[in-house]
Length: 144
Picture 1 (spheres, rainbow, N blue to C red):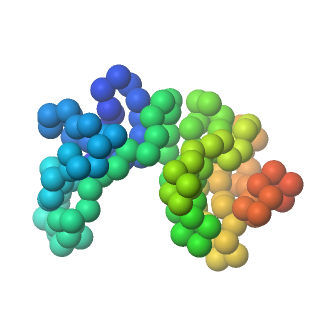
Picture 2 (cartoon, rainbow, N blue to C red; picture 1 turned 180 degrees about the vertical axis):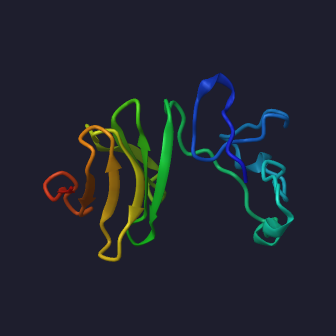
């Protein structure tokens, strides 16, 4: 799947194909299967599209979002909004989106380590940061 910029300049982690007709993202019944918003550019990846999965917009208004990392055991998706200097989180159980860390020191390049911590590269202070998710700010450790 290739990410593209949405109309109106909004950037999201999952974007629709600009050549498709407008979709009502608030109404899941408008989704048809297979979802035409999925495009396979390399035939070797076609086997990974089961045809029963759709794109779902969970957030709008991001300036430049990137670096999503999924914490399935905590029901959290965390990503960076670099120009806003924030890490944002989504909880699919409650449907909530909130700021996870502000300021984030322009964090991006998020991933998870084997201890369950969020690892981010910070452009502001140039270190790598490890964050225990139970207490995001109190347990941040700068590495470097």
